[in-house]
Picture 1 (cartoon, rainbow, N blue to C red):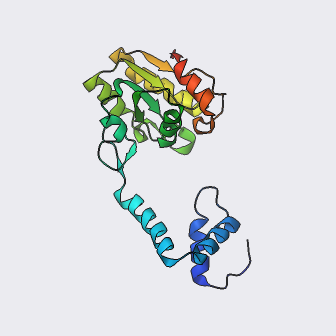
Picture 2: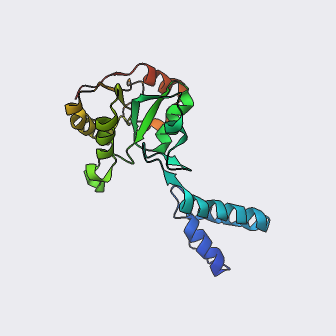
Picture 3: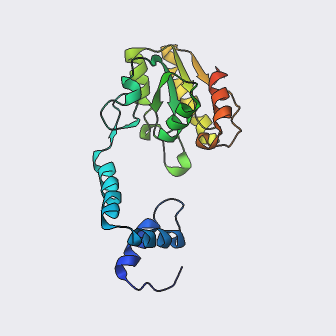
Length: 203
């Protein structure tokens, strides 16, 4: 999109919006023009919500899920099985598994996957905190709910090896999820069946 902008303020706003994932210059322009048509109060609420998100959002000190407090609502729920830990890549997978209604344990969010090509190693993820958590508190089962990709399998194997000395059953969700698929895009029925029909993880 090389057309000249009639306003430098408009151009700056479009440039910022186009930095978001999946947002090109044309879509960014459409979004900015939409905001310009909205009442000032509505635009202020939009802007303030983004600022508050950045400044006030917390990460659960136990599972590293995004939260409004230092302990998330899932870890604080006494009706959940705290001795069953589902290991996921990020918050999107927490939301995806929760939407199935088939899981009543707790989570551990790694914050990514091991990917040497992208410069992401084990030390960049919340793997040591998982090992410390299980060593300190114990667990009856650790469920690997990671993407069926090379990075997901590499991460699962690394975590499995790190947990080996603790001698706790490690399972992985059944491969009802197609190899190469991202968990967040799986339909709820397939994902729910994968959670229910998990199998023993064999490194």
